[in-house]
Length: 245
Ligand SMILES: Nc1ncnc2c1ncn2[C@@H]1O[C@H](COP(=O)(O)OP(=O)(O)OP(=O)(O)O)[C@@H](O)[C@H]1O
Image (cartoon, rainbow, N blue to C red):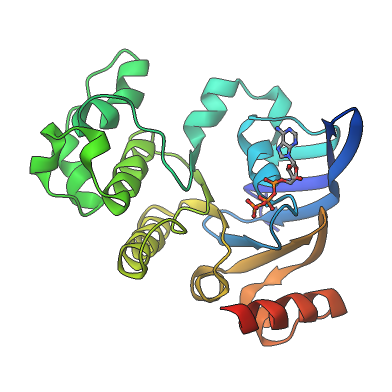
């Protein structure tokens, strides 16, 4: 068996809320292989974003281990880890300034010039003339593409995606979804993708994690999961979700 690209071993995480400790992730064990798309689904507040945040040291586990390319996250240099493990959010943070200034930020942080901004724009399906536009003037879909282009400048091995299409209309969402699938196919980028959209999870996922109340209820190949979930909790979740979407 190949070494997994990312693995979680008995991972737990708590946060303190008003002097009360809340266990947000409970004993999570699972893994993702290189080049796979893992979709992470589950009700709101179940711990999905928290699981992503553990993979690039935005937070650290209280118990258990998270390994990236075989190395426990706390043994990684945080900057190096974040270069290899990129992250994109629902509302991509943009600096004041042009699209070019935003796109070239990762290179600048390394004291380098970005040599081929046009190629990145083309890759993510943005016209080159947008490079000189203020980033905040771009549409939601354009901003999401620019944010992905900016992440790609670091040539990450892994992409963590947190609800990246939920703020977009159906057309723009599908465009960004297709772009991610292309990045995965062409660059063999491993992808961990939190989504509320069950149809999207079914379309794009090789593997799925269902998280309910901080517990990994089911994990496995997406096709098997969507064809016939094993647990009662998963069946109920899918039925309720399908009814509402
Ligand atoms: N930094 C933090 N400090 C305190 N509590 C937090 C923190 N981050 C998350 N939480 C809490 O942990 C729980 C799980 O949050 P998380 O964002 O991981 O859920 P989620 O499944 O991604 O939800 P959603 O689908 O609504 O985005 C929530 O109750 C949230 O309030």
